[in-house]
Image 1: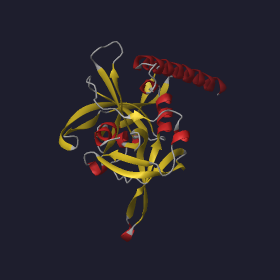
Image 2 (image 1 turned 120 degrees about the vertical axis):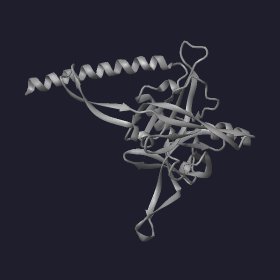
Image 3 (image 1 turned 30 degrees about the vertical axis):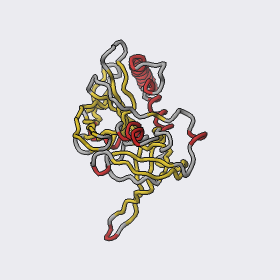
Image 4 (image 1 turned 45 degrees about the vertical axis):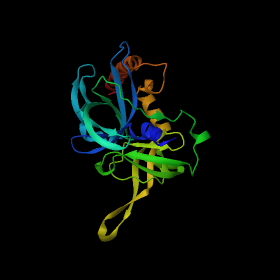
Length: 277
């Protein structure tokens, strides 16, 4: 890829995500026409759960169906900041857009946001093909980590893949030597050769430092692999993002039907508990 392609594939899809108490990075993974419209678009941003978790509140409410209190989460809007550039690389300002939290998974540390905007995002990350990782990804391949480290506008760092077998909190991680730091969380790890998105930088190694502090080992950077991203989107029924034959409307109907099935099953389980007692 030439310099211009690197900007378009890896640099421009990055946004800075802000919440009430924290911030990090995000990556535009989808921007397409709303089903049934020829002018309005829907755009989605992938990030880490720990970036947006401060805007999630889990409370209790009374369920008339179950006749008991149940947990229900409520979301507050986040902000996605887009950076604008002149002559490819020269920053020319930024614009802020509100975004709704659509789904999250605490253990997988992933979350999906939808921009409150009907305009098309001009640059979208290209996801590495599903189920191709073992065939194509190798140690020593060059990669770029792209994000808003320390809250700075988009920064790209270079390194290489170092392994695929690390497991943290029962979930797999890619380790690379592309340096990342606080604020990179929720951004992107790209394969240099193709500009394909292969992971979400999420953790860095820390070690005990002088005077009781900790030192960040920035060249030992952990990213949630793209195959986990696919699983997250499938489990949350947002798989239209990578399946051209599905629409967001179809997925919305599926999610609603699943919620109704789950609530009916919960009611059956409650009835069984009452009979057993």
